Image (tube, helix red, strand yellow):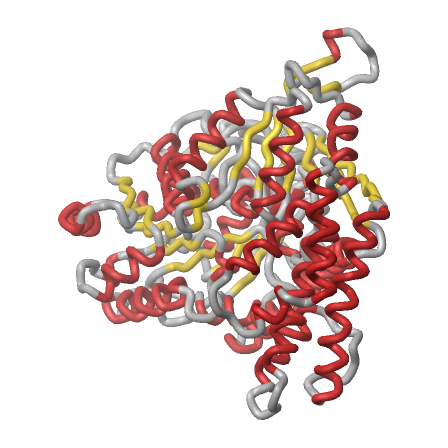
Length: 589
């Protein structure tokens, strides 16, 4: 059974006194009322209901920064699907996220048929769930395997939800699942008037905090998930602003120490010699190249004799330089030591024996034994104390007054890209007396299992420690408690990761983001690249929506209005919603 496509019952408000002239800039009072949603459990937010109203009409990719309630929109659509007798499949890339969504739905939806499946679920239990549950939360690989084994009636779902939808590129299983379910649903519902314009009876919804800054990748995501509309909101959107707090961003420039500059000079000389050799061989046209240029060059070296070793050595040296610049001395020495222990690999042995790189390592190892590190580390301690985090109690100052009444318990989240740095930062902060936890992924025997990650997040939320140091596992999806302070220990050239990091603060209380930038290094370049990419995404979405509209032969705007007339979040670039609303309560009733 397909989703309902009428314009009622997405969720009505417990406060029905809003004037028909109420502005979308005003925060909505009250709670969502729906026969399948627990009373007074979901705050009514105009933008969430507006997005849900579009998503029930057409396959939609929802772009909404971290902390603004993507899962709530999914819940509204799932409740609507259940009300009309349909089944829903909710997919997320990790077991932790799957259980997180399952628990959220169980808490708020008044329905017994909600189940969870992961790779740990026995086959006989999975078969029973696939046959009986009305809502299934699962990982994509388990779902794809069971579809291909014939354990799932793929045409039996009315709603398909993809979390972290930006992953739907290449051979990631999201695209294959969407195709299989759409084909099966289209066949079983070919006579249904509720099927979408794609010909599929299943409604497909994707959620992500942001999108790649590459138009072709965005188009690939849209194509793989059969998206008909991209709905975008950010902190500047008129209907979102009432629900967020001010977030201040501070940039702290760090100057490398003299010993780090000497180490850096050795690595640069080793790198330069490889780049000159690659230029001589015709692999590159200039020695002014970056890591991406070198990685791309791998595709063209098969016919160039003698180019493989210098190219792979240059890539490793570029990485070594990045580790030194952004992370520090310990991370650099560990990089070299792992390289030295590596068995095999193109050019590894000659690189380990390189005179310049060995000199860099010996300098770094001596500095490490002397207790020297990246100056970011000392500045980090200063910042935490300046921002009011006490070494003993983990309190956070909300006033410059020393009166205890102006202090409340706060939380800080520190992001870094490397596990070695997580260890260095955590050890230093513990030594300084701070209450600190760490959050990393699992690789081989090292790291935290997903169950351990959940435990860390719960302890952080409960206040057992006030500071959490995390790698990228803390950026994507995990329901980490809102923080007063987010610190970028390093910078990443990614719009997605920038938005995900920043979104951990400034939602329910004022927040602050502090970005540490090592001056005149790749760290500085990465910071500006990520900011530029965030801006680029905005125009890319506008272009992609036009392409999608042209392909479907439909106008992506509503009632012939331009995006600026309807208050798009980026002026003329992006149009918010297909719904022409004057009074939200009239619409949702």
